Length: 396
Ligand SMILES: *Cc1c(COP(=O)(O)O)cnc(C)c1O
Image 1: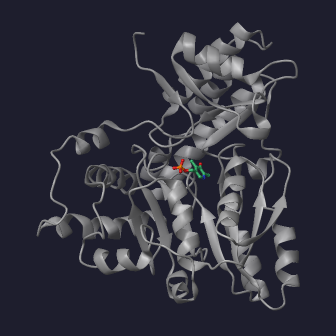
Image 2: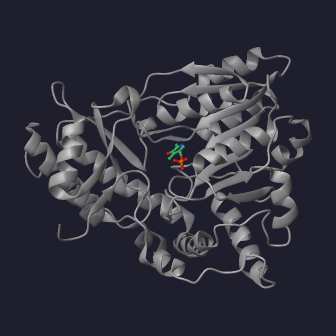
Image 3: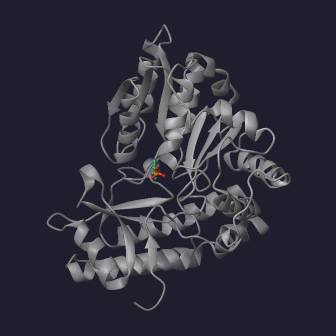
């Protein structure tokens, strides 16, 4: 097919040309004497991206899932209690991982389309007088349903109760796209991956760890080798790694951090919010609804769009892919066939969102879903034309 293919899934995201160019390099010696001149500033800038002052950010050659595993095996022991909530495929998988490591998970089942139940967390933590709950899990952005949860509210609950549990956040599809302030919000472990907000190929698990979580390591009895923070700390200190790092991806990460920090994280978040808002107005103009049930849950990185009764969302996705070379995100697990997802995160601008909306319109037309042609695209055009770009706002 002629023309660029459209990638509108919520990860992997589109890769900037600057990042591609930065990775078009010969392989290098990761034990070279000047390697730390590259890695030490990289580690420092990565902390800025997490908004972390104390503690450390680790880079594993893995994916977001490996980041989850690292959080658990370095801080927890079999039988430890953790509090979690499930409202989509990713929050579900995180609980599954904890259970496979022998943790006792109190997993609150929530409606898909809602997010972390703050009041229930508060009740459970208040009832836990002996402080048996060792960690509280928050999936900040549930990528399967396009739901964003309030991390800071969970920190406030812990603080108001004086509860010492660690706060773990899955930020795989939110960090560097949606507001995330690790130090200020007192997050103890924050997990991300390279192929979403960081705009890189898959291959890195990127994990921010607070000083409090680092200090809790001696208590943990779970076995660990590949994901052992001790080995990372010992070698990272001098700019090296305990085993071969993904040097090419690290070069890409350098370029991606330059772009993100150059734009300014607040501007990056504002850009995502504006692009997402255009998409949401389009969904409304089509006469369709989001899987996210209320505005407070709306995600600025992915919209999960519910197709009308009697239609299969997979037909929309298949048509978009086969006929228009556009990848839309599929519904996972409970919402399979019911939703298609538009990812609007990472290296994205108005035109790329309009491409996805236009492609969705074409595919929905083919499938026979009733709506006014151009209604969604038009609503987004009107909104983008009427609102200033984040970069322009910042320059004022
Ligand atoms: C993508 C994603 C994951 C899984 O990350 P992988 O890099 O695929 O291992 C976990 N949580 C959320 C919220 C995600 O979006």
